[in-house]
Length: 450
Ligand code: UDX
Image 1 (cartoon, rainbow, N blue to C red):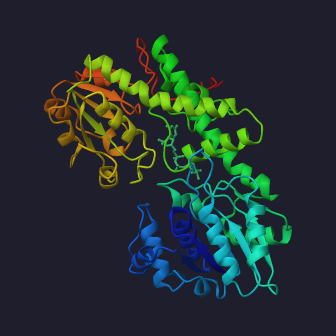
Image 2 (image 1 turned 90 degrees about the horizontal axis):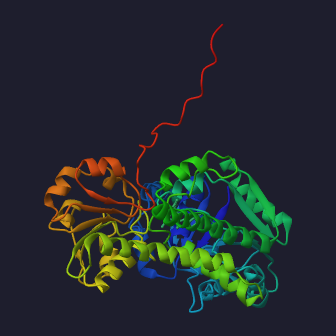
Image 3 (image 1 turned 30 degrees about the vertical axis):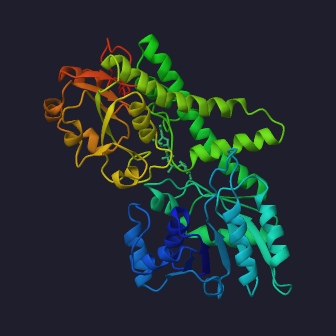
């Protein structure tokens, strides 16, 4: 069992720390935000993440997970120091490294014995060398250090599961023995562990996120074409997904991607490419298509309601995706603002993100339920695919609305069923449905028994 210090008690740091503690390690999570640490010491989590509260509680009670703002205390017995601080977008789209630099310097100045530094923050390619240089400048001459890159792939909303059952672990370093020691921490998870060089590990993270964002933008472009040509993008994606070379994931058309990672990472990769003399045409198109997906929704509402001025619109879902209260770069928030811009009166409901959204929205009535939001509405827009919206009493919803218009920004409903219920239904690339779609995958024909 190892002694681990995690610098940064945000989404990545907390989940990683709690999971390592659950695997039996001694973990100290450090954050410079003293209020956050005080809250955590009393069992109060600064983020909403399914399963995390229980994990933190259990391991804190077991004495394996501690919280502090003191570097010397956190590093006292540590063999590994994970850096998991945020790298927000700077003004040009570049990743802002100030928090990583500060954390690296603070660890370097406080460490009193040999240490493996593991970088989990998403950082521009080459940052591992920057971190090494910071350590080389600030560390005591009698201690040694090794820098290993270990990019994080966890998703908000399923972060604990992603952390404990990863598809793979990526480690990059200049010293193979150091990377192999980090690998031992992950061995209990029984997943593929890739050991490579620093820059390649850093690039794997950006390339993975950019590829996933590309898939979504790709299917959104296909959806826009489906809208014009009368094909159903959901069926198209299903038909594509059976091809093993393509696979079914990340092909859901809709309002597009948002959150704290995809927008920042695609921007940062595109910026890195451009400042190193490459023309990142595909990445730029991927971002542009994503912006268009939000704007096209406004166009659809304007068309179906014959104008937006003083139309009452209920936005269902405000978080950037379901099962999180995170509203950073949420397509739903931008949609609400764009609608207000054109004079619409916006009402909204989200199962958990209303408070966070309230800080970003002005003059939006934040309601206690989907039905309350739909009261007197000219249209309901599904902006986030929370499960709750798939199970609404749609007759009740229609009764409280002024006009029975549903604009389904996440394709959660069946167009034919909605029309049968008396709704005017507009989805994303759902075609004309002249032929009802097959609901089950076709069964393979049984050979005749002799
Ligand atoms: C993502 C990566 O998946 C994760 O590996 C990385 O570590 C951080 O960034 P996350 O931001 O939590 O995770 O969200 P994810 O579940 O990947 O969804 C991103 C966005 O894409 C959401 O806005 C979601 O609504 C949208 N999305 C996803 C689609 O529009 N269509 C899809 O088919 C899938």
